[in-house]
Image 1 (tube, helix red, strand yellow):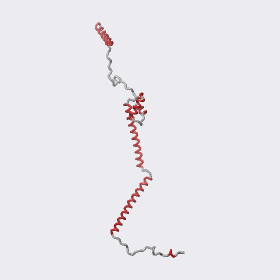
Image 2 (cartoon, rainbow, N blue to C red):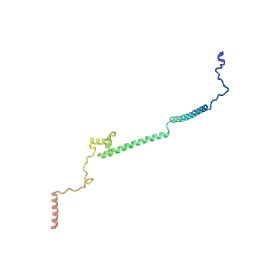
Image 3 (cartoon, rainbow, N blue to C red):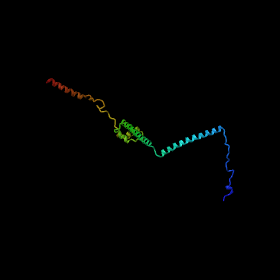
Image 4 (tube, one colour):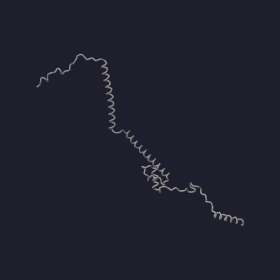
Length: 176
């Protein structure tokens, strides 16, 4: 069963169709077209940005590129080499300072030194605490970097003995 109100057509619900088209002035139409053009351009720009972001997301989800992995490995190698060079430079400076301070074996001094402290102060403290590690200054050995070897002046007894020997030779030579 159908109600009369439901099946009957209501004239108010139907849109009215005008036979005559509406007319707008040119400035209003131009403004609407400019606005629509702006929206279309903005839509294209946003679609382009969306496509770039999708590509970037796919790249990130697929994992790092081989170039990026190689660059990271190269960076890590370079950082290790730099750290090794800095350690070697520090070791060389400590060994030179230990040699300058007169350590018998600068390598032992390096091994005993606390590397977190100031190396120069640490070496001086190590030398003060362990004097057996440091050579005592000695007088230079004559003839080896020291003054030339010269005999001491003869004593009076040596001069008298020499005169007797020379005199005895002279006397023998005169009698002979």
